[in-house]
Structures are given as structure tokens and as C-alpha cells.
Image (cartoon, rainbow, N blue to C red; front, side, top):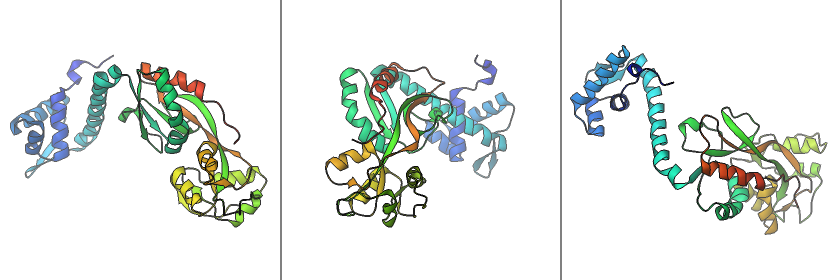
Length: 300
């Protein structure tokens, strides 16, 4: 149920207040909104009278926020942002059948992108827009319909579609080990490359193979792609997901440093917000992705 109208300020008053709060000047706010300075002042005064609290005070030629105004403008900006996004969606995205998806870079490049042509054939009415994100984010303040998430079912306020576990394999440049595979413990004699989002990947891989010696520190990377390139150039041994390693192995840019694989602590998921109706493009994508997401437990 929507609150009584007496608690709902006009959009024009909120816009005037937000602009004045951001710019610190009724004159500059008036210029931005194509209004007069007196119109901005009237809107802010009307808003304060409606709320029964002072939101702004004048210091010289500048307008400054009161504590109540500081708290209120934060909420106002979030509401105006979400209202604008909803309006854009209603006008364009839902009508055009677009799906805006946040993806993890490596998963999107090596696993999802090669399969999207099949989705396009099955659903030519849907346009998929992709943008990379490395970490979970708030759907409420974003333009995304859904996202690819790695980890556990620990992202609040979303639905989860399990896709697959992440299986990793150690790889290196062909000449680093003279074209041979090594025993897991022997890899400790070589530089090991690490990923920021998987800081214990090497430790878990070694522990799973009963190697008690902790891995040494080494170069740190924020993405699998840059870590793979470092391995190609002989800077060390990298633990890569099998779907990332496969094209490099097929092209002989990288070789297996050891034959053992191991599952990371976490899985890949498609997630989407619980507090929104599921649009038809997302329903079609979920159905298609469910058929694509077969577990990949071993590298072949």
C-alpha cells in the first residue's frame, strides 16, 4: 500500500532539493533545471513545510544541508535513480526484449560468449547486453536484470540458478617444465601465480593432493585473463578454470603443469532480484541456460 498523499512530495520539489543539495546553490540548481532561482527556493520551502523539518540553511551565498537534509537527500537520490531506471526500462528495454546481464570476465569470455549464438538462434527476439563486474552489487541501484555470481548462495535478496562448479587445473608455458608434467609437490619449486578473488586456491589444490607444504607467495592478479597471459610469458604456474585453460591448451600456448584437477570452493550461479517481476527475456534466458549448464568436473 502506498503511503497517504500528504507524505508524498512532488517530483519537481525532490529534483529541486537534490540539485541544490548537490550544487550548494539555488542559482546553480536553477540553471541545471532550467528554472528561476525563486522557483527553486519555493520548491525547497514547500518540501520543508510538507515534512515539517528544515532541510537546508544558508551560509553566506551557499546552501548547506542540515543533518535531517543530509539523511533525506541520500534516500531521495536513491529513489530518483530507481525511478529513472524503471522509466527507461518501461519505455525501451521491456518493449525491445533486451536482457542486461552482469558477468564475470573469464566466465563471460570463455564459457558464456561461445554459447550465446545458440541462444540468439533460439530467441531472436531477445537482445543480450553484457557488462563485466568482479563482485556482487545491489540490484536496487543497478540497471541489470541478472548477474553471473561465483561463490555460495550468500547474495541476499536474489534467486539462484546453479550453473556448475569451478574446476581448476595448473598450467604453464611449454618451456617452463620442458614439456613435461610435474608432481604436485614439485610445482612448489616454481613461481606460483595467484588470483585476488581466490587467495587460497593453491593451498586448497595442494591440500587436496596431500601436499602439506604451504604454497609460496607470488604475483597477484585481479583477473584470470591477465594471469593466463603471465603464465604464457613464462612468469610462473597458474591455476585456471578448465573452461579458461582449454583454448590456450588447444593452441599449445599453455601446457598442463600437472594432470590433477580440483574443485574450487564455490560454484557459478545465475542470480536475479527477488523483489521484481521476472521479465520475459530473463525467463527465456533462465530456461536456455539451465540446459547449457552441465557440470564440468574434469578437463578432457
